[in-house]
Amino acid sequence: MSGSLRPGPSRWRQAASVVLAAGWTRPGTAIQPSPPPPAEGFRLLLLQRSGRQGFMPGAHVFPGGVLDAADRSADWLGLFAPHHGPPRFGLGPAPVRRAAFPSLPHVAGDSNADSTWTLPEDVAFRICAVREAFEEAGVLLLRPRTSPPDPASGPGLALEPPPGLAAWRARVRRDPSHFLRLCEHLDCTPDIWALHDWSGWLTPFWRGGTRRFDTAFFLCCLREPPPVYPDLAEVVGCQWSSPSEATESFLSKEIWLAPPQFYEVRRLANFASLSDLHRFCLDRALEGPERWLPIILLTADGTLHILPGDELYLEDSDFFENLMSTEKKTEEIMKEGKQFHRIVIYGRHLYDIHVTVQSKYKHVYPKNSVLSKSHL
Image 1 (cartoon, rainbow, N blue to C red):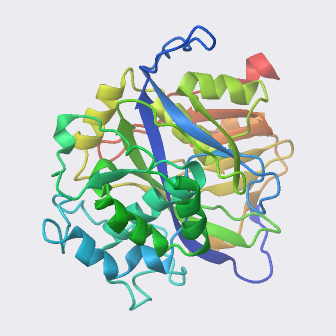
Image 2 (tube, rainbow, N blue to C red):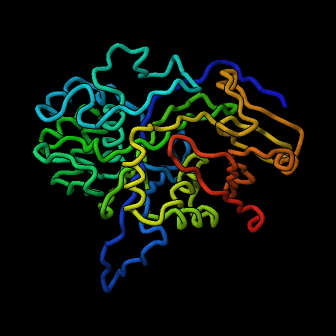
Image 3 (cartoon, one colour):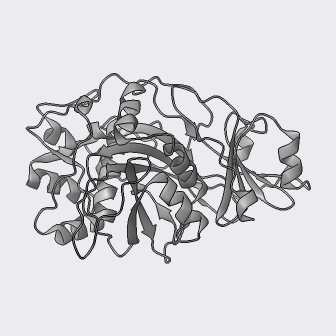
């Protein structure tokens, strides 16, 4: 196998995303009956990106976006006080810190290279995810300042949208520091305690692409789905889908999911109920997320995203700006291997997931999802 270098370095930015999983108790009406309860007992919020977006146009994604300086501003300290403050703001013991591949020395907003960080990363990234959920979907993951958090009590609720929602969103979109002003106006804090570490994904190298993201994914369980108001700028549509429903929508070409989102949807199919998912998040809170840089392997007739633990995965910084290639066909590559952790891409709406490795740090990986034989 060989690599294919591209000229010039990528531009890395830090980002945060929140996977909203909601129980399904929404009542129907005579005009619009409620859909049947999903097989998994919960549904996920998927937002459709505008086709005009430069990054993943038209894709269905979880709410999220780029970390802003306002998300780590010292001004948040006053809002969280007097009940919560450094070093952990009530988030509980810090997860285990692991020296793991990859390490990016020049990520915009990286706390290791930027002395302006005044909040812990765990807090700032959660604020970013909460702000983006508001900007893109109008969902307020806020908690009254006088209401102490109790994650063990079960999934919570989003805050009811306040009067003047559209005006506040417009202000926050123009200047993210206005999100703090909104929280002050509502006498609330971002509900950082409801966001659980889930995963971390780095945009893999691809020829011609320079915008890449180091994204922290959080999981938030809600008792019921809040109303969603797409901003009609970045986001033009939305849907609540269970993992199995989202998979079927993807295969039937109703929606398009990028490989990380497809992987996470399939991973969440492991859970039979919202309470199981919430308990799982609490039980592994001290483990922290795994952070992955997929390596792309181009075959003669397809593409593989190779993930850590796979026998072809190489913990080599050369693959920050490299991909692998082979003249062999995908079927040959699959027959040669035994230790798999990979996404096999046959077409825009046809992925297989192959996992034979054991999951780490009390997390769970997707079950093998081989769909190609029935859809090719």
